Amino acid sequence: MTDIFLTKAKLRPKGHFYEEFELGQVFEHHWGRTLNESDNSLFSTLTIQANPLYFNAEYAKAHGHKSIVLNPMIVFGTVFGLSVEDLSEAGGAFLGVDDLTFEGHVYPDDTLTARSEVINKRESEKNSDVGIVTWHTQGFNQKGDRVIEFKRTNMVSKKGAGIL
Image (cartoon, rainbow, N blue to C red; front, side, top):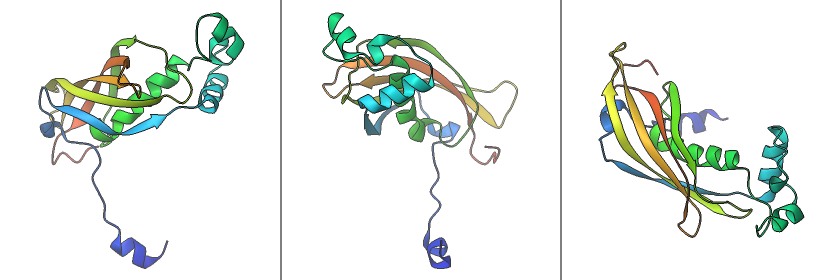
């Protein structure tokens, strides 16, 4: 990179601080992601998922599907990933996922979008520099059908703490 580029580049903060989250606040995550058959094959192979629904079109059709079914874990990872920029990109410990529900099949060339709502926030009992925030995230296909939902919780830095 040139020195000129570095002097003109602006550092943009990512994510939000604890104080910026409000109960009931909704984030319509602006990126969507179209998943294709190659995404699914690679993911399923790398994670040693041997369910023939994920890679055998004839098997999937024989079981009532229009084509192969996308591995639910790539659906989860994609929808989770769509939420990161708005919710947790500033950093902070990931504390877990609860109430994960797969609500519909996702097929190659479906486009996933995501929406999250702040459902809980509280001060950390052990560290005054952070709070703990929980979001309810939902993933939708291009027809607007909800295909997945879950709750996830992260530790989130407070403004001025400078720890994350």
